Image 1 (tube, rainbow, N blue to C red):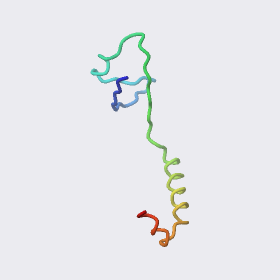
Image 2: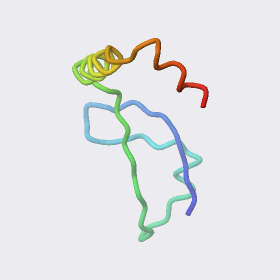
Image 3: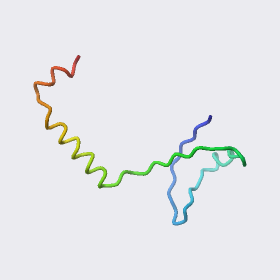
Image 4: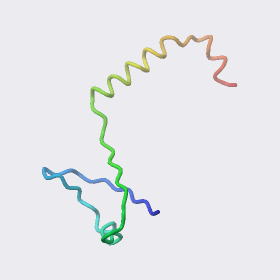
Length: 69
C-alpha cells in the first residue's frame, strides 16, 4: 500500500483539496483509507498539561537515581 501525506486547508464546504500529484494516483473503484488529524483543542491541551503537572508532583529528586538504569 502506498502512503501519501499532505497538508490542506478546509473550506466552508465539506471537501478536502487534494494536491495534483495525488490526484494522478487515484483510480475509480480502488479502496482507500483516509486518516484525518486535527489540531488539539485548547481544552484538550489544558487537560493534558494539568495531568502531566499532577503526575510529576509525585516525582521526587530521589527518584532520579532510576533515570539512568
